[in-house]
Length: 90
Image (cartoon, rainbow, N blue to C red):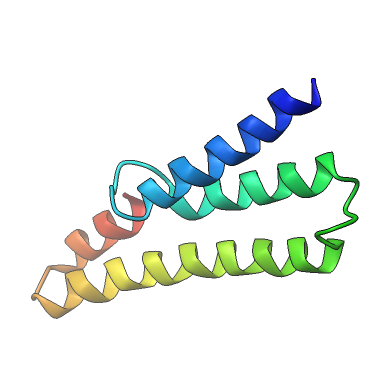
């Protein structure tokens, strides 16, 4: 069972790294999920809880930056207020 969990954690991280290039996959979330699963399997012995918390905060920060960049990008190219709202919702 443990080997299957380790393979899952590894697969999540690899798919997450691929997701950094492919916009279809949520790369940062998958890498974080793999890290969290790996740390949990090991009982947080090699990866302490504070590292996982910082990884989670960085994951949230990356999504906030991506969201703000979409809004600013839409505004920069002269999109209307409704289009910027659509970029925010989408």
